[in-house]
Length: 637
Image 1 (cartoon, rainbow, N blue to C red):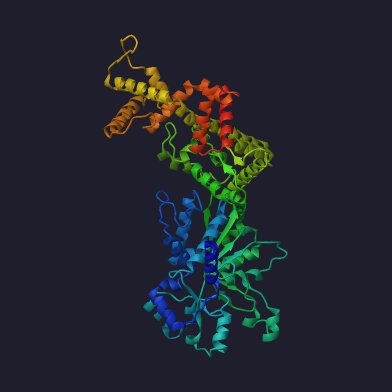
Image 2: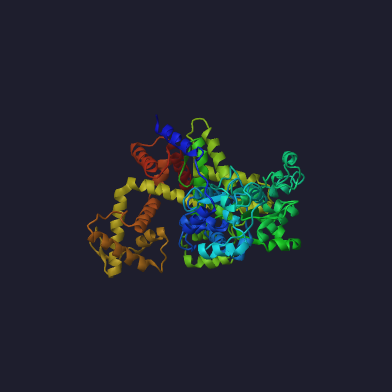
C-alpha cells in the first residue's frame, strides 16, 4: 500500500461520525469554569483564534502570522480588522456594528473573509476552540440559555464562572424543553459541534441575486408547509424550516457578499441584527443571535451608499475598513507567485526571472498618485524599501499621508494574472518553443491588454505611458542580468580593474601619488577612473570621499580575516566593477550575442554566459536566449 493510500485511509476514518456522549448543564458549567471561552461570544472566538495564531499589533514591526502567506501588503487593514474584533470581544459597542470591507475589485476583501471562515472551522476542532450547543437546536444554541432568570441564577453564573449569560432559548428549544422535558433544563442534552460552512454550522454566506426572486426568508427562515399539516399551525415552532442564513450563522461568522446590492429591506434586517443582536421571524418574537457580520463591497457602491442621506441609520452601524491594492512591488510579486501556482500545477511552464516583477511594476505604478517631485518609478522603489537619490525611507509615511486615495484605483491583480497566465499558455503552444513566461513577453501581453481595455483615451494613454516607463526600468535590469553573466567570462580583467581602483583609492585617501608602471614617474590618482567606477552605483561627487574611505575599511577587515580578495568580495564595489567593465566591453558583448556564427572564443564566452544564466540565475535555455537577444539589440542602439 502506498503512503498516499495509507494517509487517505487514516483521513477517511477521522472523517467518519464521531461517537460522542451528550453532557448536561452541570457538566457544561464545569467546562466553562475550566475554559470560559467555551461560552464566549462570536467576536471573542474570532479574536482568540487570530491572536492564538501569533498576530501581534504594530504594522511597522510584524507580518500577521494568522494571515501570513495568504495576504500581502495589508498590514494596516488587518490591524484595523483585528482591532475591531478585539473591541467587540471586550463587549464594547463595536460588537453592534457590521464590519464592512470596501475597496477596488480584486483587493483581497473576500480572501480576508475566506481566511477567517477557514480558520474558524479549524479552530473549532481544537481544545481551546471547543464549542457546545443544545442538541437538535437549529441555531446550535449556547447551552447557558437554559439557565432561567429566576432567583438570580444568571447573576450567580456571572459571579462564579466569570461569564455573562445573554440571550434566550430559541422557539424550538423552548418548545422541546416544555413539551419533551417537562421544563427540567438540567436534562436537556448538550453536544459538541464544529463550525462548517459546507454543513451550515456557525458559518454562512449570503449573495444578493435577482431582486424579484429574493425573499427575506432567505435570511430569517420561512414556513415548512409539510410541517404545518403535522403541527396544525404556521406559528408552531416546528412548522418553520429554520434554514435562514441568520439561523445557520449563529455563534459564528456571517459573510455578506456585495453588501449594497441587497434591497433596502434586506439591509435593514442586517441593521436590526447588528444593533439589537436579534432578528424577526413573522408570527414569532425577536430571535436573539450572536453573529459577527462581515460584509464587503466595491468602492463605487460604497461611496454611492455613503453619499445617500437616506442611509444614515445603517451607515452609523458600520465599522468600515478600506482594503486597497498593494503598493509594494515585492508584495505584489508575491501575490502573482501565489496566484500563478495553481495555473502551473495544471500545466507546467517556466517563469523567467523578472517576468512577474515586470508585471508587478506596471500594476503598482498604475495605482500610485502623482507626486510633483518624485517620478513614478522612483516612488515605487521608495515604497518598496529602496532609498532613491535624496529621498529617504523616513519620508514614506508623509508621502503616503498626502495621497490618501492611493491604491484604490489602477490595475488589479486578478486582471494582471489572467493576462500572464494567458500569455504563458499561448507561448507554450508555439511550435518548437519551450513553455516559458519571460519578461519581455509579459510586458508585451500587458501592453496589448491595455490597448483593448474599454477606457477613456486619456486613461489608456496614461497606462501605456506606464508600460513605457517600466520598459526603461526593465531594460536596465536585463542589462544588469547580462552583465552579471558576462563578467565571469572576463574575470581576470575584473580582478585587474579592482586592484587598479583600490591602488588609486588608497593613494587618494592617504594623499600620496602612484608610480607609472611604464615611465616610473609619480602620478596623481586617476580621478577619472575612480569616478567612472563609482558612478555605476550612483555615488555622487559629494559622497565619493565617504565611499572611498568605506571601501578601504571593508577591504581591510576582509584581509585581516584571512579571506581572499576578489572583485566580488564587497557587494557594492563588485557591482561597480562589473558595471564599469560591462560598459568597457559593450562592443565585445554586443558582437558576441548578435553574431550568427561566432568564432571559437566568442562561442566559448557565449556558452559560459548561458551556463551562468541557466545554472545560477534561474533562466531556462529559451528565456536566456530571449534576454541575450534583447540586450544585444539594446547595446546595438
